[in-house]
Image (cartoon, rainbow, N blue to C red; front, top):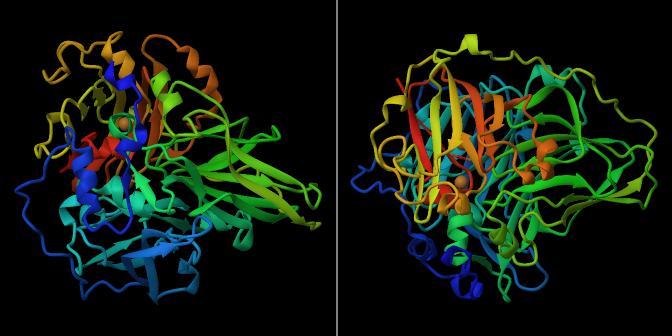
Length: 540
Ligand code: C2O
Ligand code: CU
Ligand code: CU
C-alpha cells in the first residue's frame, strides 16, 4: 500500500524561505480533493460603521518578518502585529521575541473594533476561533482581503471568560498561513472568573504549543509528501510561544497555565514528567464547574486547556517538565512511527520545562467550585431522535464531511439549522464502504480494508457558540489503543473542538443562537481542512 511506504521524505519538503509564491507552490504540492471557490465574487472589505462606538480598537496587521528561533540565522516568518488605538493597555501583550501574534485580552461585554490590514503577498482573512460573532465577523473565506486591503471587524464580546485562538481562515491557505506564523491567543475575562481570584498577571502564563521543521539555514519547511497530506504535517521541533526549548522560571506558588494547541496536526498527551497529576480548571469554552485532576490530558489542534499548576513546596533549582507522554491509535500504526522525524506522533518528548527560581510563602488556594454551567439535556434539543450528522470520510484521495468536500456551495438538508435552535449533533466515521450516507460512497474502501487502514483521529471544530459533549462511544467496542488515552478527555466543560478517535462516535449538543448565516465546521487538522474536510451550517 503506497500510503505506508515511506521513501525519501526530504524530497517532498518545501522550503519556506524567501521564495515569492510559496503558498502557491504549497498549494500545488498539496492539491487534493479540496473544493473550489472559483467563481466566487470579490466582496468589498467590511468598513467601520459610524454607529458602532468601540470600547476597544486595535490595528492588527499580517506582515512578513523574521524571528530568532534557532541559534544562527533568523527565520523568515509571517506574523500578526498590533497597535492599540483605544482601550485599556492590558488589551495587548506583545511577545517581542516570538513570531506569535500579541495576546489579545478582552472583557465580556466590550465592544471591539479590529482593523485587519493585509500586509502579506496573498489574500488572507482572520477568524476568531471560539468567539461567538456574526458571520461577517467570523473570518469566512469569502471575506478574504487582498494585499494592502483592510477589513474592519466590529463585534460585542458575548463569550464567557476563556482562551480563544485567532488565525487565518483563507480558502486553501489556512494551513500554510498558520504554519508561517499567523496565529495568536485571545483571552476573555468576566465577572464570574474575577470573583475567583485565580492567579493572574505574571502568574498567568500562555502556553501556545506548535511544531515546526527547519532546514539547515533555519528556515521553515513544510510538507511531508503524500503521508503529510494524509495524516497532516508533523514537525520535528516543538515550540512554545514561538520558542524552542521553552523554559519557564517560576516562584514556588500556584500558576495558571493557559494552554493552546496551535499545531497544524500534532496531537499531544500532556503529562508532568514526575508523575504529578494535571489539575484542569478549564477547557475551550472557559472554566469548568469544578477542577478535574487527571494523570494526563489529550490536547488536539484547536483545543485549549486551563491548568492550575501549583509549585508550592518545591525547592529553588528544582525542575519539572511538561511532556507529551506515549500513546498510540490516532494515526495508522505505521504512520505514527514514520511521521515527525525524531518526534514520532505518540512518542514521548518534552514540551517545556519549569524551573523554580524563588520561594514565596503565599499562594492562592485552588477553588473547589469554579463556574456555573447549565447542562444541556436531550429535552432541550429540537431534534432528540434525529441527530444532525457530521460524518467524517477519509479515504485515499478524499477528505469529506457528509459525503462532500468544502466549496460545494449548497447546504445539505440537515445543514440548514433554524436560528435559535439547540441541536443534537453526532460526529462519527463514515468509511464509505458501499454507499455513503448521501449516495457518494467511496467504493471498495470499507471497514477492514482501506477504510480501517486510513482510520485516524480528527479534531472536529464547529464555529459559533460552544457546545457540550453528551456522549462518547465506540461503534465496535473499545479498541486496545484507547487504554493509552482514556483518562485524557475532559467532557464536562464548554467546547468548540473535540477529538474523535478512530471508530468513535461523539454526541454533542450545540446552540445556534443570535446570528443567521453560514458557519463552518471542519477538521482542525489543518491539512485535512485544506483537503476539503469542511462544511457549513446555514443558520436561517
Ligand atoms: Cu480554528 Cu475554522 O478554525
Ligand atoms: Cu473556529
Ligand atoms: Cu481530520
